[in-house]
Length: 195
Image 1: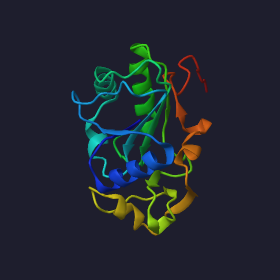
Image 2: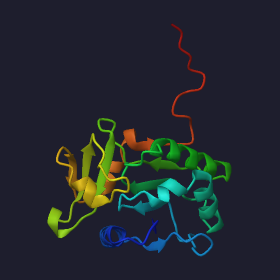
Image 3: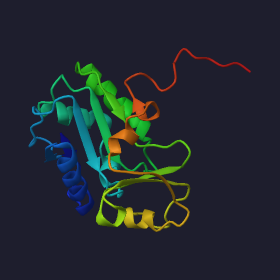
Image 4: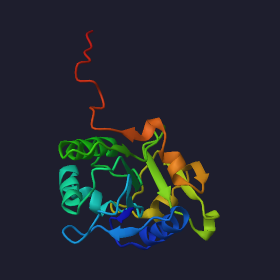
């Protein structure tokens, strides 16, 4: 199931593509007014417009509470964050780990797949369109747009961006070991270093 986190044009197009290519249903993220009992083993949190409005406001524990109140089933085992990793205030890998911890405390063990490429400061996801042959595109970017409230088009206008992935199925890019986060700490707390 796809949970669209905002009502943007980009999110609508991306949700339509995913619904058609993976026969998934989509519902909007409206706390207290959504029902997720139809979710089987995979949930996609979709916010592809790169404006970061929601990611600046929402906390992992609140997102988990909202989803649990919406009848999120215990059969869930994978959550895909389908959004660009461009937020300056939030580390998406840490967000994913905290989100997984909150679900684990409610009895749901999940792996969260986070769209990051460690070789770049920013990772930009571009949904399929006629311009890009109906492929998902992923760009690595090492500079930020000059605008404080940048949108997808602002990131796409950066000349130094590097195309790092261009294919139909975005999940084949997301579903690798480097993008997987669980409830376990990113660094083993017992690991110590001495100088």
